[in-house]
Length: 255
Image (cartoon, rainbow, N blue to C red):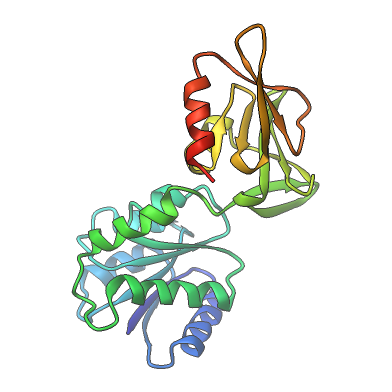
């Protein structure tokens, strides 16, 4: 397995290479590239066969998306970054996995297993790259696995499945987890709705709720539904008459 690493931090690149070799001793790290310019030059004059690329996203002279944008390169990419806002774009740039830094052995091992599974252990040419990516998108693109939240001076990755609901107050999105931890984040509710997947429902302008937090719903005289949550929000969650069929369908179709 021939692997290329794109990473502008030398220590991180070496650590990643060592981790890959521990997991896959038969692999060969055939190049370590540290910038958009270097990577473009390398791929433009490519002589070696590449099976897989591990790539940071934010580089000193741009992003790795700038590398792949105008290249006809049919190579799967595992993107590694400290930020989660690039997930959608990553899967439009040959991405088959998306690892949040700090990188650990478990995530690298999972990415390599996914690569082998998707390409086929016996014949790595049995599927086109677009077929591989479409398979990954079905599982990974539909829902971000983690989101970044802010707590005092820290940035914390929180698993999306652990979030009970998102709530807008004074134009700021508040997050409440199932164990009642509360955080703030900079993304809008509209942006979150696009990435959290079908397990969440946009009840109204203020609430985006997890299916698992719904205890019951009752109808009111205003023909709205009042949704009772196992982890209550600061206000009642109301679903309008217009959204009611969509909400009820969501309740029965999402586990």
